[in-house]
Image (cartoon, rainbow, N blue to C red; front, side):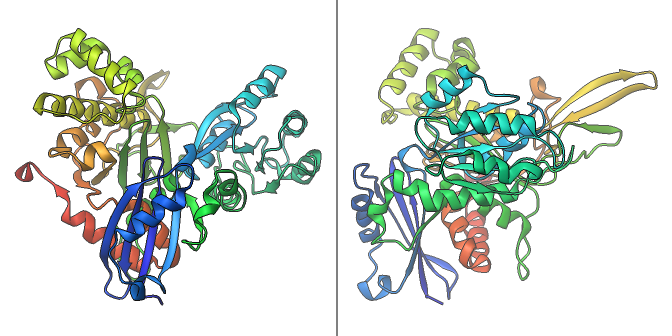
Length: 466
């Protein structure tokens, strides 16, 4: 075993590097440097030099990387029925760390084909039909996709009865791979094989298209998209290993400039008596991406979701001043707050991103009146008893009061039917290591879990710390 392992996260803005002493099970050094888009190896080299490790320490170290550079992994997901296989396909894609550009259901039309060409996805996930069920739909969609002017890697995860026939529909220029059906039976979700197939395509095909091969002399491999590494870290933290106990059900909220990602680890089954679950079973490891909730690039759509009036009331600013600040942050996303009022404005943005992002991720209760009386229906995951919420992302990590933003995850009077964490403990990814530990988990889960738990425990948040 190498004593030092170096974990790299190549982001669109910064390249972050963490060196872990696997023998002592601790973080030995951390560093970051601006990502250099035209040649990411330059930024990576700068970040590695910032570790200040001797050549003797660094040379034998294994260097693993994940990446969200160049826009991350852009996907289109296609299924049969919107609420069934199309939804299952989307869950598989999101869990693999992809940014789902659009989900299609039923038979693709010529307009859909034109739209997919314009979207230019990196990968297409093609599902549809339970095993032994509908075959017409997925075969039709395969023929439409096979006529795209530019070949795209396609992961086929639909009705296994025709999976081989679907694969043969595509010209040799297309790269196709077959995974187990994301919904082999009605009501049964099976997303992990498709997630693994997507990850393999990412490693084998997509990193070349993204120009990340220039960094190959410095690393041993780019193993997954960054969001997939974060989800892997969350799963490890939740479930533990054979020798170390995990933390149980938890939620991770990642607030970025462009999106707010929410990950939940837990079965999400009802915690109250008399509640009936409706819809597809939820995956234990679930990720949602809210592309309109960001504190910089997506600040206009975030403000629209909150409303100008809502932002003005929360900040104490006039609507005109809010609008001017939002316009500035949108036009110049690198803008940092210069005084306490602008710091507070960022905190309000962060709080609202957490509030809305978690609200869209969690399950929802609704009333249904039947001949037997009132019945409570649950759609989605019940996360009300989740005991830990972990925050990451620059606006949280660089804040002097991250707790005020993360508390947006809890219920309020206007969200009483949303199954949000009711009384969790809050933790901050203060060492920015979730993605790094997701990578390390592939090689040494025991070390990764120890480092992760120790780091997060050092950054537990409470009002006493504020």
